[in-house]
Image (cartoon, rainbow over all chains, first blue to last red; front, side):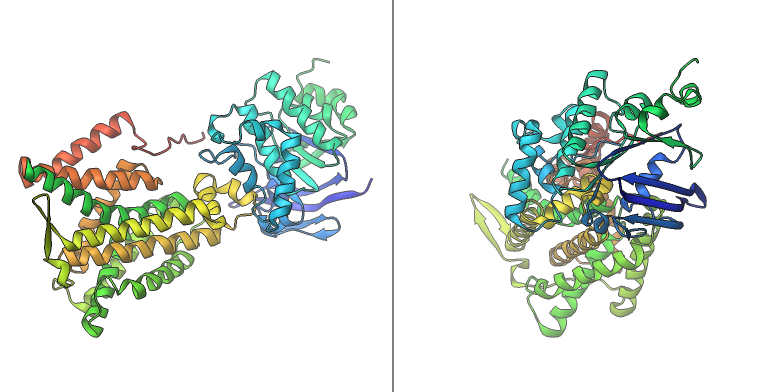
Length: 239
Length: 291
């Protein structure tokens, strides 16, 4: 498959220090790319440079062959890349409906917004069922699903998910991963960062293991998951 | 009893003016997470601008708002772009220093242009009053209150009925998430700062009609405005309005029932009691820092 997103030699960080060191990464169109690794490996930083929240110091980032490095989050969003951040990101006192509608903030075609709302409601029934309730009244898992719904309001080509299962109980986590799988099957390319390496790599068509701002290993998700060294280091295996 | 009711009515009317001034302050905090300690000086600047138009062109002080509010809005946008936007790290602490420096700069410039003598805006409604159920109410307080209702009403309409208002509320609630849905938070912040400074112009004109002022009058004013937004909850417009009414009604009733000496003290007792049970203020949201 063709690379939808390609990072080449990306160096980035905060303040005076670099977190990412000449990182190369390809995200294939139509797949699920999952990045795993220990805390501080730079996983979330990769997502921040892709979505425009952090400017890379060096290197190129190409989306559909065109450079997006250094563009504003809004410009990157308009090119079809949407990020759902790690922390809860719904607007707490707005209703579920207002939150989802805000996902189309950059769209100015009213009919298109209504059509997307309809599609999102068909995919995520919670949006219709709880539409008048403030977002803060939803459980953590429900909030995550509504965040996904909001992200889809732009009909993005690439959905970036930063640790979507963080803080969720096992049952809700399963629901969230099922939803990610369904989004992928509907044609979305997913770039996922996940602390829960087993679940993330189990879902991924392409797995990436990061360490100290560099890629240590990559390959098909199941093969990365079954790599003995990676299993011993990151997945708690005893072999 | 009549005196108490009269004091309560006056407290509500003057509370509206403080609500207007404090709403700008809390709006700026909500969007940018900065405390604009220069808001008091901007109110005084607004009062002096009206004073200048009143003195030169003999315009009615309230009518000068047609000129001073857009001027102050523009000034607010420029101040945000020049002084606040460059603050990238530790902006909460640095913004206090920057806006305090701004207040001192405004005080100095006003002192240079207008001297430090006290002045007051004059209008026919400054002392004229009318009777309602035996109370005597001065027109200026009613006009000031109506002005506040009109401006705060317009502000709420913008916030809850427009796309820009949605972006502004989104930025207040979660800045990063707002960026990720395409809100240009720099632009929203500049406009919010402009709106906050424009409300200072409106508050300033009513303050200038009801009080004699000089360039140093902002010190007392900012301490009262900060107290109001702390009681109401930082970043909450509704909180700022209710806290302003509580402050002024409490002070005015205490002044009549006990003594003017105790007026501020009683309000601060209420403030301390509220903060013991609700450290985030009446309508504030409790935030835990990540560690």
